[in-house]
Length: 293
Length: 293
Image (tube, rainbow over all chains, first blue to last red; front, top):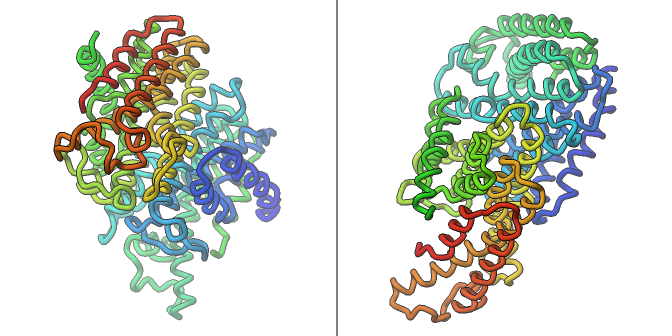
């Protein structure tokens, strides 16, 4: 399957279930509306795609994996709502639409985010039924670690603390690894665990995810530079005026591309170490490297 | 044991463990500081007290119950941090100290709240070890329901939506039941389940908690009126100028007291239906009714 076929296969199932977890519950209408607004504003659903691809390789595209995918997407969505708030990035638009607080007000946006984060743990803990109890507590602990102070929220704080000064490569990797890498890694691990992957595979997949998270971020930085070049007419590859706290800023554009390819190769090596063929994850990894936006 | 002896027994153990869950983890210092600041600003720790008392009645004051107590207190603390934000209640002080956002800034306060909420699920899912998997997924689902869109966050939204207009008694009870009652009920149920309480006891304890949550709120409203009377010299029991969206405002001061006693009696009846003596919960219930602040 190419990436388009994968999106076509998984996305409608994930979205149907994602929305139903909120639509099916009794809650104040204003809250439901704010939660669904941001859930429905999603794009390619990269994280759920990682979860479903990881699970599918073990021959079990189960309801449980779907719920892991929903939980990841809820955490991702809550993080975007809170990141957009005036006290944080103060963004008015996301994907061309008003941000949650612009649409519903700040109080509702804060609470919609809180509710989505909480819902993610409800969805996980109710996945599958009692027989799934063992993997569910493992996956719940992993999600909390990936999303919380030791993961995404920690990365967000480090990002804020690092604003307005130049970062070292080490600091930059800390931020990216925590702010975005940990949740991507959870998406892959969680899907594999729910599908009954052996522990050794889960370790390889975690290592794969860590590398692919870096690839994702370096590619983003590269696209920012090459995008800018198109717009302002500066030759692509010029390092003048680059933001020092990006990979091209710290390593130059060519250096960043080399680093991206290095981590991409390492990601594929980890994937080759698993007990099953992970064609789906390979397709997503190559999409991450080759995408042009 | 009277209430002071109970607080003396449980509070130091709960606090020691509560702080260690944050102090022992690798995270940015600024985040750790903001999380601990609010965790350490706590008062009597009523919710953990309910958890420990409920568990203790089954003869098992276990590490698991301590972790349930920590999870409840983390959720309660996060909710106070977010409630105090400028976009919500905009409070500068809590318990005589600067609120989290006054001390650390809004972005840090939002993220410290997010991290505490997430940490509560991590603590729960890691309590006890694999043998505890079955009750942990049950308790995790209960906490998520009590804290999220169908519980506390839903109550908070309903409260905001109800501002600046008179509420019916039914609306008032919806708000209180969801905004504070559900988490109190979880505190009791979670402790009992972790201690191996039979399912029928858990049902009685849930009903007890629902009643005691109402008692708690009605008493708060009564104290507000009687406190005001002391200050402004208006005779206690006068209903003139009462806020219509409080129990005394809707029922009069005497009506509110009658309603409080009605629910208190029902709470004790539920407690009498359990298979063990719940002296600890009785002590807490009577403290809630008799307290003068």
